[in-house]
Length: 545
Image (tube, rainbow, N blue to C red):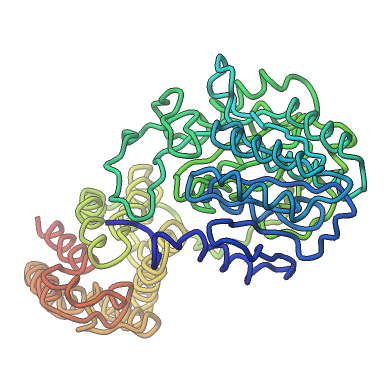
């Protein structure tokens, strides 16, 4: 099945252009009203008094190219079908529509279809008496021995530099020369974990093996130049930086961090951090992105583009524009921090030994650590798939403290309070806070004179009050409450049986009253036990053993 939202595949590009234009933040874009097969986006405020700068190519690389149309950048963009060059007629119409006496510069990525169609259109335009020059961007260094390197994300930087020169009123020759100079000082290289999927086509089985990335993958999904056997962010950044730096040499650089379409914002931020600590760090003057500038539909990958700076380039990159897709450069600086003395609401205690308590604690933590994958698998069906990892994280911390003899094992009230404090610190999400409330309230009740069974019920009551869940809501309470009620007689075996019965019962509950499962429909819940309840039941079983 296709992974794309669309109505009519034949109208997909036209529909997308319409959506882009009506949402343009500056309200300065129009579409040429011509043949429906001619898709040209133009500056609404253009008056032909300066050199026109036109680019374009296949769609699917958004925001390129229409997202770079606007004051200070492109005059017009010619949009082909997905990954297909626009026709000669479309390019010619764009040239004629926006070119005045000052002439026109075409910026073309180095693909055969684009070179031929833009080139023939330029020759035809000259027959109308128009001055037209063409610059071909070939910034991809993935195949160093290739006589025709591809034009990829660095093209956006050429758009910016040429667009600024044109906006300043420079001649066609000067605008062309600035663009050529940018091309000569520009190098790009990318990687991908997954290639892109085309609208209307079945999902690809996956050419790229798990745990690997393709280096130099083309922006149309062409196979990469080589395969790298890692997905480690630092190793991948180093793999890209080394050949890029070899090309760029010494000098101040602007670095474009381009999302090819399918990488999360979290990952792009992480990759930016790795870049900031890479061998490039002392040469980076500006960062552009991380953001999609020249994407490849939903490709799970990114690219780096290096531009060696001079005063003209620096001025051009920082000049304001009125476009949809350009990202303002950020002057690069190391991470800044603000000194702060941490506040720790910690319990003062003295570690002590108790072999019996240590045995029970080791059984409980060991059980939760061993259950990690099983609980995650259960939670993946009814939640977000992390219950096992969350409980195991807390259990590992307590187990480490136990191994290092740092716990007050012979002071049970204090032990419960310390466990509550640690779980609030090391366990993520709501589970850590809820378990912290449980152990903290139980410890306080035990310290005030209550017996352990009653103190644990007090902890449960506080958990229910603050968490908002109750028995029957398909949470760990469905196992914990019957277990603690059965434990009021001191019979741990009865408590374990009650916990198991409670956990098993959650599998037949068709509606969750709390937690992430409450957002899941009953078909997904049917027959699947709540992972938190399973964790409680297994811990009680481990205590019995």
